[in-house]
Image (cartoon, rainbow, N blue to C red):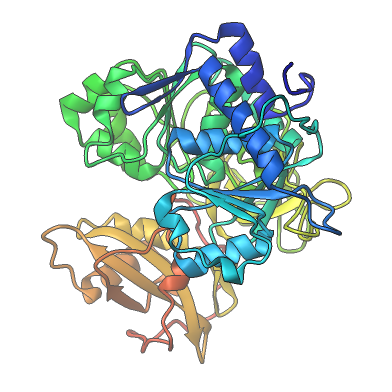
Length: 544
């Protein structure tokens, strides 16, 4: 007798069962020198689901299923524990295994996790005395010791599947509540792209952290949804795991900018290892056009760019929708995703590919007379959206299903979208908008700059002023005065940094986003030269 599984429910654990029935002997996962077939993976998940169902008991008065926190690198242990939690009708809480004791405590306490399945080094950072809800800790996916089946509840649709904690670049991490339907919906939306992004005959690179929505659903979830094969990589190494890519003939790359830079710099070896690649997709952070061009020159493969958030499971737009990647663009909305650009006054500037205001001329010209829209906040709607933040659903979509992302973008005349910045990172100098990404793009065009990050700091006369943090390129002796002059030649005066601080490196999150809160100075810098005081009427040029 098998544990009951509802084959009609949009549950990734059910997709696993279907793949095991359809082609059980085919490889589901490669990891180092180990291969798991679909049948082997399905059996391991069922054994662990039975054990978790016995260990994770509902708390009195808790309206949500028990939570199972999972903290491993990209290994089969993570995959088994994650799918077992879903099969057992529990809520999976993927956790970064690199978290400090303080960060771990926050996620475990906030989620009220009843069970933690983690690597041994993670267990050593957990003080169970501080976590009364935590009933069990395992350093490998547990298996039931009893005989016979255990009844597992059927979960799907609007039932909570995953609690994913945001990266915390703007504050303490919050748990985004993603249902089974939201996870499945994103695969349905991506699946409507022609030609297909992932199919059952593909081999997909799973090198992105599985505790993040991008690696978890766009990577592992896609493998499960389509019955493809995944190549787990828990350590990319200096060459970007070229040996794994070549050995398993990876056909779909899902990566972040730093990975594409590594592969581009691998030269002939990179081109040979990536010879079987059919689709290359980059997300999580802006892909510099120069990196994309270099990767294409080295390997012969174009890089498509996507945009999304943890709260949207995660993909919202992709250059795959239009078919042709455009430098700097995040593409167009996925089929089934509604997307609006909303101005500061709440009026739509653009909706689902159509400008929503008349071209009244000057204010719509972003640069050189090109047609398009002013920057507006991205507001989205779709079945892939989260249900709000844990535990009460606050901050979720409104009554009509729309949710404001906090990101700012504009659309060009072709309907391609260009991400500008986070709304919360917008800098106001004398009341005029300065978008950090634009200033960073100008700085990084200087040959002496390897990386840069820009943020606003308080100023007594202008409200805010622009502060730049710069990592010099190897061998560079660029000075602050030189970079300020470079900016003055390429930016309107009110957009120019008034101070430059050189740093050895920028603080990054696990998926490559700069943590600007860690750069913010304790006190305002002394600006030099003096910030602008004149009143200007031009619309800021936000062309990347």
